[in-house]
Image (cartoon, rainbow, N blue to C red):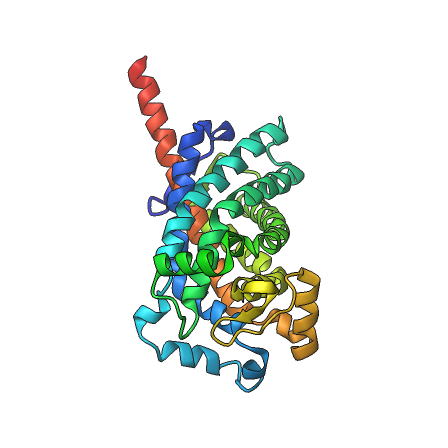
Length: 314
């Protein structure tokens, strides 16, 4: 009997209320992004750097340049993510669980239901997170011209219009739809593979391991679209369609996904579309492990709370 590994008891669709999914998801998302923020900063700077500058650097030089900076520099923009991650993940997990319950019907292991539920969840949550993600990425850039979250939001709206905060929303959804499909399919498959026929109990270690595998694979596959998203979010949209990059980012003449991909491919080749894939995987593997284990722990807390409340009422 192993008393060191916490157990999570699986209840039929978890027996939780909508708001409980939201709280568990909000905590999980916040913990995930706060813990992994320095790695996300490194990934953003590698993806946003101008093509000409990138070619003159070795793959190891960018991490070295970033690590030479103060610890505070690695966490610049974390306030924006703090404001966006909690609400976005609350919406994400609540919508996911609701759709999964509706679409799964009597088959709780239906992979298509999981994938479809994830797509619905990401379309909704991305609408909440994208503006703060834009602000976060602009603040993460080296020599960012913005003083903070409030200054960045104000200047973007005044100088570029409110729509600039959603310039990458389409790309984000296009990226996160396959990311979510691969993520959840891998997560569920990894869980089933590790627990075998015994499905009564699941450990936190199991959720962390399955989440890490799912996060790493999904991150690697969707890196090209993440590069496009980063480039779009780091553009300053001026009058008459004039566009310029922030802090050395490539200047893009179009916000079309195909056009941005073509621009990157012409300047750097197909390798440019995989820029930052290592830190992206290093971010999403532990991030998914943290998120899933925290989320399941939160659900377990509410399951026990509901059981205690139900028993006391009887």
